[in-house]
Length: 270
Image 1 (cartoon, rainbow, N blue to C red):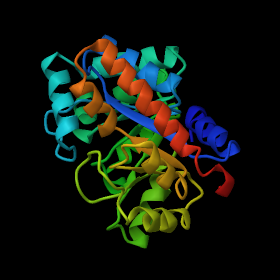
Image 2: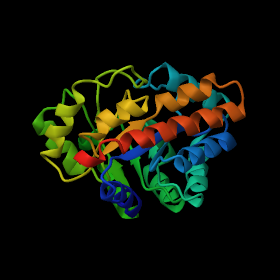
Image 3: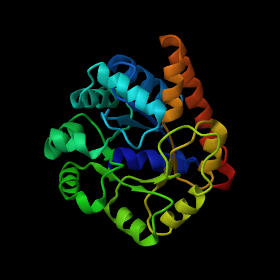
């Protein structure tokens, strides 16, 4: 586990709470405002930030993130923009990882991407569509530069599959709470607690839950059984709906603060 991710989870655990992980695509709503908004998230209580690498075929993403990614791409966001965003966030003191489909990294150059990300102060990459069996080049490049490799488990994962995933993973395990696309939901999937329990039985790595969390109350629910709570679409939706820059910043700060209270809500039971 990279020093940054390790510290974030250790610090959260020492406070008897789950870590809060926030997501935003690089270049959304524009490169400058993206950095500004993520810094606001961190100031309001987000522990780790996922910087999304916009991709033209985001099949696993719901309508809010697809709209944000499309806006970022139309504005000219590239992989270089993503790396510049990570650098700016790292210089601002944020613990940043990249969330990316595999194709853009492969096209950019696996070793080149690992080198540039590490040099920018990034701590790892979440690769939702890359399986451990096909990740050999990325595993080698990431380990060479001390980057974490975050793979996903899902409710459909067998115990054998979970063993394979956690053996290749470092940093934390991303537990997708549903089989659908990303998106804020009125309730977190009932399959999430069992998936986390099965995963934690097979690894000592932290397990963070994503897909669906959109409120402090939901964060409190997930924090009762998971080591991390991941929130993306809810932040994106607020920014898409905001009438201006100030309103977007205010909305992001308020949601991050609410979520930060939520992940602390089960402190006595952890």
